[in-house]
Image (cartoon, rainbow, N blue to C red; front, top):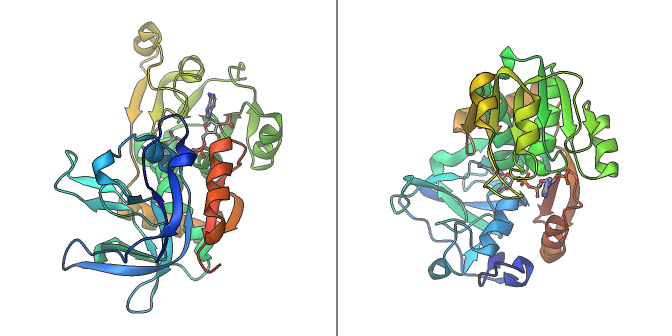
Length: 317
Ligand SMILES: NC(=O)c1ccc[n+]([C@@H]2O[C@H](COP(=O)([O-])OP(=O)(O)OC[C@H]3O[C@@H](n4cnc5c(N)ncnc54)[C@H](OP(=O)(O)O)[C@@H]3O)[C@@H](O)[C@H]2O)c1
């Protein structure tokens, strides 16, 4: 079958480690696993980390990339794939598709039957393929971790990315005042159109916020601390620009800040996110849709940093 996979690891030139070609059919890892015919998938920064060897070892290669998929279950149902799977070999007891188990960027993917969530008819395959990683992570960052219901205002750092655009749209849909930073003036214009006040990285905000959404790390963390109001939550799910920021601890204790880590979300949270999209009319921000045969170009766009929102692969072409 067709697949986009890591054929080797390259820390400095991840795109050169990507191969788009043929791989064997996926092997179910247990009796309760099923094979899904993938109709659409989406790329995540996670796929670039994998090609760089973060969370993926040489001995696991070749590894089909991809965490997100929507498609057709063996019984004909239209489904979304929840990407976190039980993995006894991993210290966490679980892993995300493409870490230990072959990923979603292929004609077919094997997953536990319990990981299939019905696709709402109101959402397209392309819409739902954006939700299971970036949008689910943003949803959990705002809700269970960030307790956004207690906040009036939210700051989203590096707002052009997949997680960050999701956080902007979701926080705005939840009725919050949203501030967002981006390095790129063009992206700041597009963020403003999503309902946020877009500012340059490091800019002073007109107020302190109750929740900060952090996926950038070293380049923005000091600003996140400065913008956080008394008792605010700084929720961290990534560190694209480096994971060792200097942290002003005086500000952390004086302002009673909570710095919270999080990864992905639960199946119930994914179901709640799907409901929210159906009920509120919110739809994922899609940067671009590539045919599966153009997967290498899609990866190049992700790596370039120019994308605004999610990059989707249409597996029917
Ligand atoms: N823990 C989890 O469960 C989980 C889930 C999803 C993602 N993540 C992590 O979260 C991060 C974002 O993922 P994604 O898929 O949304 O990535 P993405 O679509 O590639 O977006 C990355 C964003 O980071 C910002 N950025 C990158 N380098 C920067 C720098 N030097 N200074 C300031 N901003 C910078 C950019 O914002 P601007 O261009 O707008 O400035 C860019 O839009 C990744 O590190 C990923 O691994 C973690």
